[in-house]
Structure formats: structure tokens, C-alpha cells
Length: 316
Ligand SMILES: NC(=O)C1=CN([C@@H]2O[C@H](COP(=O)(O)OP(=O)(O)OC[C@H]3O[C@@H](n4cnc5c(N)ncnc54)[C@H](OP(=O)(O)O)[C@@H]3O)[C@@H](O)[C@H]2O)C=CC1
Ligand SMILES: CC(C)(CO)C(=O)C(=O)O
Image 1 (tube, protein in one colour):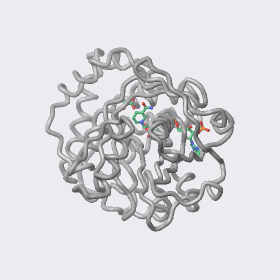
Image 2 (tube, rainbow, N blue to C red):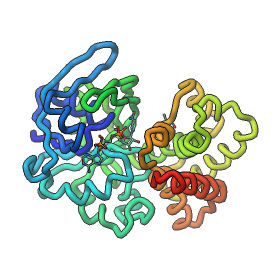
Image 3 (cartoon, rainbow, N blue to C red):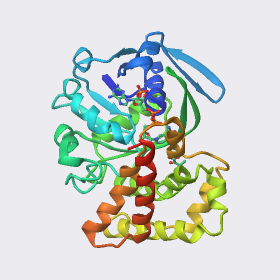
Image 4 (cartoon, protein in one colour):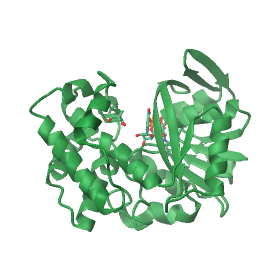
């Protein structure tokens, strides 16, 4: 199987390294410093074991050519650009697996969400029929342009975007499991996506705004009612689109608190001067709320303040 990966950041590099180490043929679309570094191989460090593997990499999608599986592992603001250039890597049989946080563009039965897919360009470039839904439960970080450290690799959740599972999803699960990556095949991947979003759509922007680690946000008593209000609104939106949440906001906060003094990915992006995943995490739930008639006043406030911060810092 020919496997293409767009984006050799923390997640893309981890997945690429594991698949390549398991003997698969992996080609990476990368650029700049990352591409130069990949020419000397990709290094992955997990559970105190460091492994290095050769991968093929290029900045030219046509040189990589048509793949059987295309994994897209970029941050959400880069998705429009990469969808636009992915054409030569995909054919009518190519399976496309986006590995991103937040609400994906296809979430409402393929009907484009303007927050994450302005103009519907991503939907046009990536046919829903070729797509498999995915949630990444892991914590990885790049330690140099072609090295990744896996702090915690819980699992990938895979499922058909229109719900249910299929032979192609089971085959994908087998591919990752053979590479040592745990997979849960889900009958309802949309619900799994919404559940993960419910956990990070409030913490991430609040940490980006305040530059506080999660433990400080979670123990600030004046903030708790606001966090819970955002979570309640997101749960109500989820309930209206078939993605109910069966946990209380307090219980979810307690789970996050167990992770200790960590910096969310959005705070890390702010600190590195990278564009933030605001639309995927906050803009899209807001847009869906509008579409289904569920009010989201607290989420709207969080969105407005975070957008202004990001605009001021050039992070949109
Ligand atoms: N890191 C983690 O632990 C987790 C991340 N996620 C989610 O996974 C997704 C990916 O995150 P992560 O891997 O951390 O992000 P990173 O920022 O580490 O990596 C993104 C990569 O995409 C590359 N990229 C962007 N645009 C292009 C392009 N046009 N052509 C080629 N490469 C491109 C970047 O290249 P360059 O370096 O050249 O800019 C970078 O290497 C996000 O949605 C994130 O929220 C989910 C769970 C855990
Ligand atoms: C770790 C967690 C859940 C924090 O909200 C996250 O997903 C992130 O940092 O993006």
C-alpha cells in the first residue's frame, strides 16, 4: 500500500515513523527545514526508546504521485492550502484520513461549514465518499524538524463519517495496529469527535488568552462558571446534532485536571507565533449552534475575545 502523509509535524511524524518502521511505503509532503531534515531520516522517541527510519519526502505532490491512503496531519488553518495541492496525490480510489483536532469541514453530512471551509473549497477537493473520520488521542511534540517525541499514545478512533464502520475502516485499523498504534473502531466517529472537542474548545482558547497552564485555569474559582457555561452550550449543540455528551462538565474538568500543569496546543501555537485553530475549535461549534437554533452566548464571547487576541498578534 502506498501511504502519503501531508504534514510532518508532531502527529504526522509520529504516524509516518510508526508506519515506515512497520515496513510500509511512506511518502511525506513537507517543505523547508522539515523537508531538508527528513532527507536524513525520521526519528521517533516513545517510552524511552529512540528509533530512526528512512522515509521518502518531497515538496512536490506530483513527484509523490497517487497514493492508496492519504493522511492529512496539518493544523486546521493550513487545511485549505493542503487540500488545494493534494490533487496529484489522490485518485478516485484513494482513502483520505484527516488527523486534526476540532470540527472537520464535513461534519454536517458534507454540507460545508463556512467557519472551517470558507467557500466550500475543502469539500470540493476532498470527496466525502473517500474520507474516513478520525480522532487522535495522543500527546506528541516535535523536538527538531525531523524528530518527534511521543509523550502519550492512547489511541486513534476511526469510523465512517456518516456513522457505522466498514471493511475499509477495519483494514485501516489493522494497518495502524500492525504498526503498534492502538485503534478503536467506532460506530459513531462524529460523537467521538464532538466529545474530544467538548474537552478542548474551552481550555485551549482560555489558555491561549491567559498564557496559563491548564491546572491554573481549572483551579481559578471565578472562571469555573464560565468554563461550565461554554461546555453546557457545546453539549446542547451536540445533543441537537446527534452527538450527545453523557458526562458532566465537572467530571470532564476533573479528568483534564489529572493531566497537571500542561500547556494546551493552542497556547503552544501562540507562544510559537503560529496560526491558532480557533475556527475548528470554537468558530465551528458556534456556527453549528446557529444552524440548529441552539444559543451559544458564552462560546460567542470566548470566540470574540480570542479572535481579537489572535488578530492583534497576527495568529489567524
Ligand atoms: N500534537 C499533538 O499531541 C496532538 C495534535 N492533534 C491535532 O493534530 C493536528 C496536527 O497537529 P500537530 O502535528 O501537533 O501540528 P504541527 O504544527 O506539529 O505540524 C503540522 C505540520 O504541517 C506542516 N504543514 C503545514 N502546511 C503545510 C503544507 N502546505 N505543506 C506541507 N506541510 C505543511 C507543517 O510544516 P512546517 O513545519 O513546515 O510549518 C508542520 O510540520 C492538529 O489539528 C492538532 O490539534 C491532536 C492530538 C494531539
Ligand atoms: C490536551 C488537550 C485536551 C487540552 O485541552 C488538547 O486537546 C490540546 O491541547 O489540544
